[in-house]
Image (cartoon, rainbow, N blue to C red):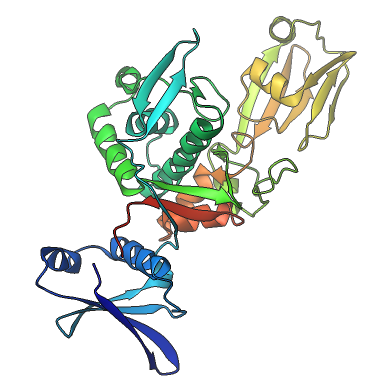
Length: 349
């Protein structure tokens, strides 16, 4: 691609000159590529050739004429791994509920899980960030387990056609998601040398949560979530309904205590003890962060947030994107201890 490079000093700052020649057709094509694509190729070239460049400005030079300037601090800094992985060549094994295995491409898997998370008005950059997390999950599970369970706590797999009946403008949405999938092909996250799990929630209570078992999960402010329409939800249950759902007797005179709501929390109803996650699932609540109010004929449960509060907040990320943030800035904000990686063919030497 580049046949030579030169580092010059300008105003006490290093500037990298990368030289191409118009003899090659791809040189013409490169002039019209967007800055992210060019930045990705440039970073790859710098890494692969061990260029001791520490500045931010790069000039592309074709036949001694500067044709493009790139600020590489404004494009994602990938750690390049040489491989042949792509959304169409990487195969994913899905274990279905009957324990049979189906084999599909990564593209098909990503389309399915993105459709399962899709909501109107989710910004394209947020969808890209989510897609990077599921790229990571697919690489992790295929490496460590050789399969992905169709039903797991991170993403429910159903064939993409399942969503035809549940989503209006299905074809338009699929076209949008295919573009998203293509643009983050082979990009993933690591903490040290390990793939991370795709912790995603819709909304939290103003701050994401850390977890001692997952050191890459950081507690970061997400104050946008306080304005989320999902911030508070009211759920009313008659005592009979509650008793049937929990398979215990609950009355207006029952005693309820909640322990350690943010860390392996439990709820005790009279002599019966439940994990908060179990309690949430049995009552189909949106969050295990909740408050309980007794009334004469029913129990009111007020949940705050939607999801477990770990990792990426879709609502918070949406506000970052609306204010000009890119998918890699979203990922860096919610997963500050991780690094972006790119599986790439050896195209930059």
